[in-house]
Amino acid sequence: MSETNPSSDAAAIDLPDKGPVVEFKDVSITFDVKPVLQNISFTVERGETLILLGPAGCGKSVLLKLANGLLAPDSGSIKIFGQEITTMPEADLYKLRAHIGMVFQESALFDSLTVEDNVAYRLHEEHVAEDEAHKRVVEALKFVELEQAIDKFPSELSGGMRRRVSIARAIISGPDLILYDSPTGGLDPITSTTIIELVMKQRDVSHTTSLLVTHRLQDAFVMATHRFVPDKGMVPLPKDGPNHGMDESTKFLMLNEGGVVFHGTTEELMKSTDPWIKEYLS
Image (tube, rainbow, N blue to C red; front, side):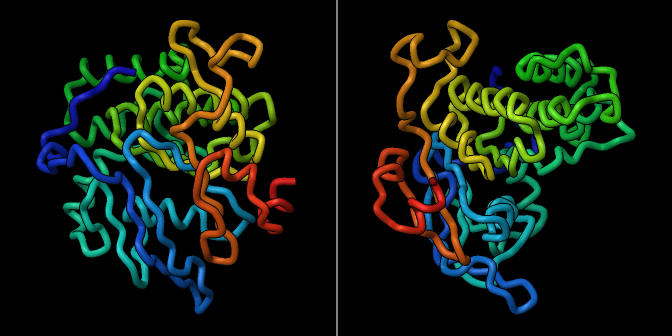
């Protein structure tokens, strides 16, 4: 998908050319006296995709909400595009979010709006002209191979189609960071593969920095070991050439019992001798 220009409000925030896109330092948060994340520290560099793994309830989705400023930690520092967001006023957070795309669990589409209006929601908030908004919606829907559904309502779509609309909505503004919260959750294996290939397409065409939560190890390792090839318009199988292999821009962060148990490359993860990691991956 081609780059799009941010709104005038978003342009008021100058994004640095260097440094990590996401930086957590000693971040902790507790709900109802139960620690969810404890002293979490990690960074995501420009162009990297960080896959978040761990058992249910370990805080993966909470971490994404912290990164988007939807939750504030009890302690620690969170920098997005080099800016401290834990103390940032809501008005400035709103401007910062113009540079962030979010794919929520279960898609979170507006039932009363058509696919076009769902995808164009942020553009309407930014008062983008209707002709320009329509053009960009068509472009985003073509990217997720769903332009034929532009006039439909969410109730008329399958679960996989709704997820693709959610991805189109997340990428329409050409974000500098995308947060995927279980984009394949609740989908059948074939549909899940389609969604993961779209995430790979976004990664390999636009090189957008991303955090991706998944409960499916298969999805995680497909992401880590395959690439979308623009010339072919597809993700080739291993026998199709040298594009199969570890994707160096994709890394893993594993959480358990509120803490980080692993942060590193696919190869480092596969070679880990940690008993808990080996059991989780088996």
